[in-house]
Length: 128
Length: 128
DNA sequence: CAAACTAGTGCCTAATTGCCACCAGGGACC
DNA sequence: GGTCCCTGGTGGCAATTAGGCACTAGTTTG
Image (tube, rainbow over all chains, first blue to last red; front, side, top):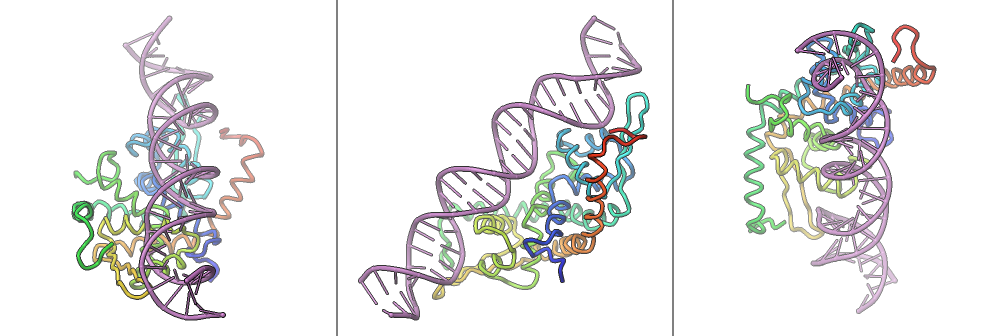
């Protein structure tokens, strides 16, 4: 198969990196609720800077996952909406967000165990 | 709900960032096929550096998604294997990898359209 | 007349990623 | 017995990327 994310030069590797990047899962998830304006998205994606939001949305627009529509109304309105292609990736991303929310405590627990075990020197049997 | 990936201070946001980071989806996908040694993973994840592989695996180990077992055999063998928790995230990640492979061409097409439309100045109706 | 809202852009710094060299402890070659 | 290879790493430095903060510009509101 030509398309293999494990191949270095396969363009679909870049695509995986894109959908799996920091703000993409959140942005697409927010747009899953319906079309949203720039400001709405900024408020929803708590902690994102204007710059990163602009950049994320541009990338998504370029890749055909969202459309950007400008309404030259009084204070100027820009709406972002998922395309058909964008909607096709919502399920895996929603599953990922859901997993993060559901399994956070297990991970936090594992981290504590790991961080407490580490400074107490090498393990007896399987030394690091 | 306390656990909300859209909240800035929610720890599950970090977890989402972790599983959605550059090499995680590939590493977990590779380990889905069964336990693997460091070198095997390095060959499978074409293009990854030792450093990034070590870092990725350490993070996954710390977060309780993989186990690291050292066999002090002749040339020294280190095996990585998914934990129960690790296996719980394989499905969404596999779906994401699969999506990237299947929808690459649509995205490439959208990119071309976007890149060709852009330099030709502002669109007549909806100026940028 | 100043403030805030709209959707951004630009500069500069901080964090992340990647490249390359190096390490250690053996085995095999010659 | 010196040198090369294997194993699974670590550490330094450079380049890329992310983020904070300031600024724009037109309109509206106090």
